[in-house]
Image 1: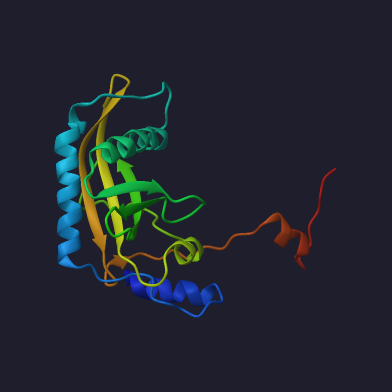
Image 2: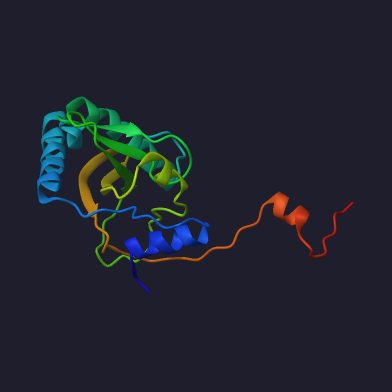
Length: 198
């Protein structure tokens, strides 16, 4: 059942043993307009949709998407005015940070790449599974950007076709998938029976 992302983050923090703090903020129209215009202008100035992106032979779909994203970021950074995309080191969400040059404000920037966009597609696109990195990198409620790049591949090259920017709000609906995981440490400490052979 879809849940508001703000509610998800609160429940997630409780499960992590933390006192919940707001992790997602409402966007101001001025900011969404400015970011949209900056990317629109960078797309035009870079002529990125005309550029061929060489793809390594035998690449999986996920690898192709990663290669396209690796190509996309420096091209955008060379042409973005007033913003830049930086890496957000460490595992988990977000993988990138959008930085507003003048104010030094930062926004979680998650970049996804896909070869098809279908508004009826219900396949999962994982955003986040832990609040740790988000809480460490961003103090309090922050504006989130989900960037989805559409690309086409053929004859060993890919081309960027479009970019969709979703400005995530506290009321944005997400699906929650509860998962359980183990580690070698947990298995070694467990009270259940186990056997090692030989």
